[in-house]
Structure formats: structure tokens, C-alpha cells
Image 1 (cartoon, helix red, strand yellow):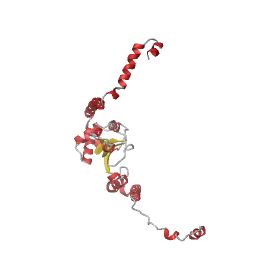
Image 2 (tube, one colour):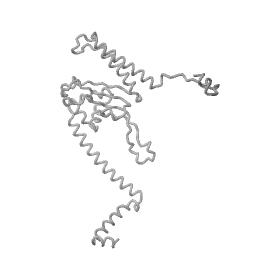
Image 3 (cartoon, rainbow, N blue to C red):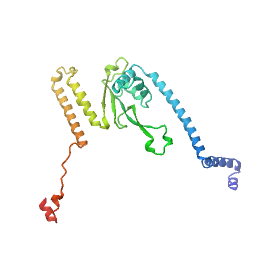
Image 4 (cartoon, rainbow, N blue to C red):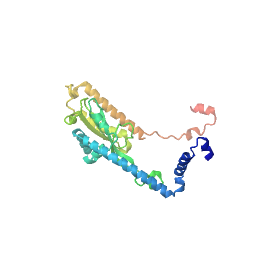
Amino acid sequence: TESKYHRRGGNLKTRSTELGSAVTESSLTAVLPASTTVKKSTVLSSESTKELAEQAKVTKEERRAQIDGRHKYLISRLADGIDLSEQLVEEAIISDDKFQLIEQFFVPSGLKKLLFFYQDILQQNSNASLRLDESTNSLPQKKLFITMGSTENFTGICAFFLRTSDEVITASNVSQEVNFGMFDCPNGNTLQGLEFFLSQIMIPALKSQQNWGAVKEGLKNSQIQDFLYAVDKFVGTLSSSRQNIEDKIQLTKVDIDIYVSDLQNPSDYIIAG
């Protein structure tokens, strides 16, 4: 090693020191007892966790300071609909990494919808590092979170807010400019949840609607009647699709042995056909 480094310019002392340092560092895990290595890793992990927790706390407080009448309206509707306290809903919202979607919903010509899922998700167990079986590392736990609706599987309750115009959403007009609704997805059955929402909530509400805006005739208008008929038909299609998926329409099993047991050659099959 010495002759090698002398040939490269006489930096033996410096390079030997670097080499020794690298060898010493890389061989620590082999020299130290396993418990010492695990302890060092645990300390580093604990420090990182504390730093992340502190950053998350600062972010949450900044978001909490942004909450105004508009946010409180959303929080109130969510709390009533899902049967949670407003404090829990607020905490879930300010802790969500998609918090900025709320602001994008409020601005002029902003997002047309704002979705929340409330369902079981897998949470990391605090004692997961002590277990060898990975299947026991996560536990299902109910969580309320903001979603775009396209990245997470829908298995629980969907609460949604819809804009009625492109106007900016303010604390004074949020109750007029934003509609709230929700539907349940029991056991992950989205079709059943949507069918119930349309047939038991939306259609009865539409059929009892008196004010249809510019359409003065209301329910007597042929276009309104065609619309309601189309919605009814759509719900019927949903119901048929759901029953098909649930195997409620079953074909009779036929025992073909009694028909083919006497067929011996190709001509027999042709005659049977």
C-alpha cells in the first residue's frame, strides 16, 4: 500500500489516514456487538422522528391560524355527517398533506369538488420493530382524509362538497355556493353505496324540488321529466350490475355426462349436434 501511494505523489500520510478512517467506519458493524449497532440506529431514528414531529407541529399550527368561517363551515358539516367532534375533524384536516386542496376549492373558478374519505387504513404499529412477522406490523384504523378520489381505494364513507358557481367562496356565501353530500360504501361495495345514495336521497329530493330555476313549469316540463326518467333508468342499471357482480343471477348447472357418455366417434358427435 505504501509503495502504491508513493508512486502517486507522496501523499502517503493523508491517503493512509483517509483509508484507515474508511476501514474503521465500514467495519464498525462487524466489530461492535449487534446490540450496540441497533442502539445507535435507534438513537438516530429517534432524533429524526423528533425533528419530523417538530416540523409537523409547526405546519399544523400555521394551518390552524388560516382557519376561518369557510373552513369552519366544512368542518361543521363533516362532523355532523360522519358523527365526529369538530375538534377531531379540524385536527384531521390540518394534519392532511392535501390541505392545499381546500384553498384551491375556495378560489374563483377553483376546484369543482372537494372529497373526503372516512375509512379504515393501515396504521404502522408502534411495536412493529419488535415483531418479525410483517403481517402484524399494521393495524386497521379509521381515518378522515382529503382525497382526489383517484389514488385511494374507496371502502368506507365519502363526504363531498360541490361548488354551484365559479364565484370566490367566502365566509358569507359558503353556505349558498357549496353543496354538501355523502354516501356510504359498505364493505367496499361502491355500486351498492351509489345506488342507495341516488335512489333513496337524490331522486326523492329531485322529485320534490319545486324551484327549477329558469324552468317555470317545474316537474311538468318535458325536459325535467326526461331527466328524472334517465336518472331512474341509470339507478336500475346500477342495481342490475350490482346483482350480477354479487352472483345473484346464477345459471343452472347442467350435468353433461348423461349426454356425452354414449358418444363414441366423430359421427356420433355430429348427429348429437
